[in-house]
Image (cartoon, rainbow over all chains, first blue to last red):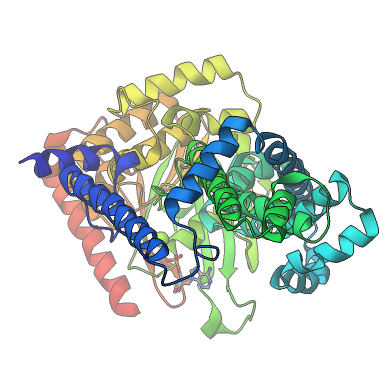
Length: 280
Length: 263
Ligand SMILES: Nc1ncnc2c1ncn2[C@@H]1O[C@H](COP(=O)(O)OP(=O)(O)OP(=O)(O)O)[C@@H](O)[C@H]1O
Ligand SMILES: [Mg+2]
């Protein structure tokens, strides 16, 4: 009965309806699933703890989870993570913003200049298929060891997904909408402003979402290959000291940051493109 | 043919032909030598078998598609009606999913920089008339297909067009809603004096609404017959069982069948 009520509500309000093909899940099943996820984590941590303490593997290589958490807790309370973390996040954030601005503007420009787009498209595809992170070492050589080089690496890594997605979104041509635009006598600018731009948003936000994760990776890798400061550098130092719990503690922090970025982007995406999963 | 030449035509189509492939050989023609004049405030329905070129003809008249030969003129001048004077209802509702119902209906006013307050007032009147109360801040995907189509009708009417092109606007609706909207459309037609070109598959709907009915034949699309509907107005639900109504319906059905047999 609860089941019926829930599906009745979801059909009436498509915003919360499941995607087509996805089975409807009751809240009870969802609770059970969440419980099982937590159980899995507890079991894995327990096994690691046991293996590590049993002496089967070196405690130096596989530290017991308890040691990792106490290192993490110590670091958090003494505050050693905050400054490097802020450093990396700042580089990631500013690089991401620059890439978003550039990718979106250039995407818009190319979409309105189809000839130029056709000429440049092979190169865009080529760059997009290259793992851009691989040029991080070069950028360090060109730009130096400061925060600027990190920002440049992040920008380069984030730029192409945003550009390609913007292009793809703006290139969509829906015949009905085009004819509607002609029937209404819309100018080129009005077509862009009222039809193509809003229509491209699901694509643009898919690009931004991917890039937001790339931004974090970009900042850390830039630090791995020489950029000064930041949480990546700190991780590298821990590694050099063979402080494996320290490395794991930072990994956990990065995981939390990554999850947060993911959730933030998803929330933003939902807000802006709320209409997109439902259309047609 | 007398009925093909009203004395005061507002929309005239002469010797119109269309081929989508650009080739001019007869086999490629979707429309061939179509001649039609529509008088001011006249309600003309286009019927014919699926694929005979009804949508194509309507879109060329509305300036949404290029023609391959012939002329279209509006108010005595070559060319199609300017966007400010026409409304179009598409076979699919073609609403923008990111705009609310009200914003969708207001889109023509936004694009043409019309008086927004007046348009908003008119939009609300239309929502009332089309039985769409309390949905102005909903989104198109929250509505049924029939409601979406009614919203798109409201959008086509918001700037009070002189010419209205409608492509099977009630095709997706149940019979009851359809009859109700036919009454509303007749009402709109009488009150605004708009010239209406109405594409439909439904013969009794065509008879109910039209001053004239154009029956098309396929391959190539052409006009097979034009039938005058000399029934008084306003027509009511009772008209459907009227003897004269039934007789015209039969004539249209015969034309329709003959046109279909030609293909
Ligand atoms: N964009 C197009 N490109 C090529 N051929 C087309 C195109 N649109 C329509 N046609 C062809 O032109 C012919 C007429 O199509 P049209 O859509 O005008 O028919 P219709 O009478 O409106 O049919 P229906 O009643 O099914 O809507 C069809 O044979 C169709 O295959
Ligand atoms: Mg059609």
